[in-house]
Image (tube, rainbow, N blue to C red):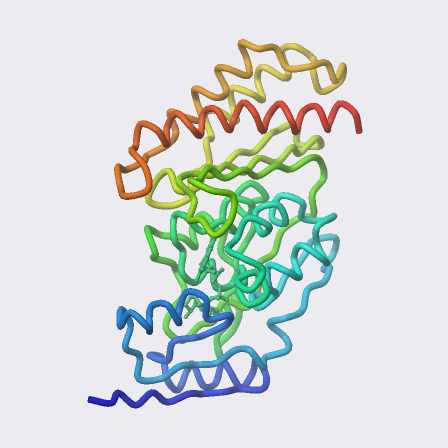
Length: 292
Ligand SMILES: Cc1cc2nc3c(=O)[nH]c(=O)nc-3n(C[C@H](O)[C@H](O)[C@H](O)COP(=O)(O)OP(=O)(O)OC[C@H]3O[C@@H](n4cnc5c(N)ncnc54)[C@H](O)[C@@H]3O)c2cc1C
């Protein structure tokens, strides 16, 4: 039986929001790199699709009082090309997403919309305390990304809202991202790790990807490292981080994981791998900070 799908094609954000309010069941489509897969496998059968590709406002980014506001429809390729110096961690993660075709079509807004624990765009947002801007006809609200993602493939946008943008500070120190998978490209993360150095706050933020139901900030590891860096005077001396502190940081990151066994990996391997990544990324980031 043929299933008719109504396609709504707004030309502006105002029009898109009005259409979403009038058709709350309409499923937004940006790059379509998640949604088209779901449609092809008949995992989703929407009666209406809201095509956001002509909404220019969603494809813009800019500064607002020193904070970056990046439209939900900015592709990974553009993040790499245009924002690589301001958001190096997100750009590193973007380089690992799919293939050139996927990076040209796929958006961070779509990654947020899907809210997969394996979404590579999410951990870099967590370590920057990014907020997700949700827009509806009745107004706009900003939600911290860790509150926006409520569970595996679950997020906090209401039926009458669209993800308009994400908002975050530009990097103030080194940022790193690494992903473990069976090959280097076109791979869903077995696990990933994002790390950002914030010298003014004297803090290193770290977030695990694909190692729990949502991305996970490893707060205990962050607190431990903040204490160790302070105690040893390393923010001022810029000396290397000692091996015991780096090892303990890795252990605490591993302990923060809430992984499962699935087709891609065992839970035990994920826990081990994020601990290794944590030590490695901390070493790279701290070395860059020392030499800056
Ligand atoms: C071959 C292949 C490889 C991939 N590799 C990776 C990878 O390495 N890493 C990774 O993280 N992902 C990967 N993906 C998944 C996908 O590319 C990403 O999740 C991408 O960010 C989705 O963005 P999109 O613009 O294509 O989203 P879409 O498919 O258009 O939408 C995804 C979801 O978000 C919703 N949505 C989109 N925009 C909005 C908006 N503005 N407001 C509200 N809801 C919205 C949609 O309704 C839908 O539910 C891959 C996919 C494929 C097909």
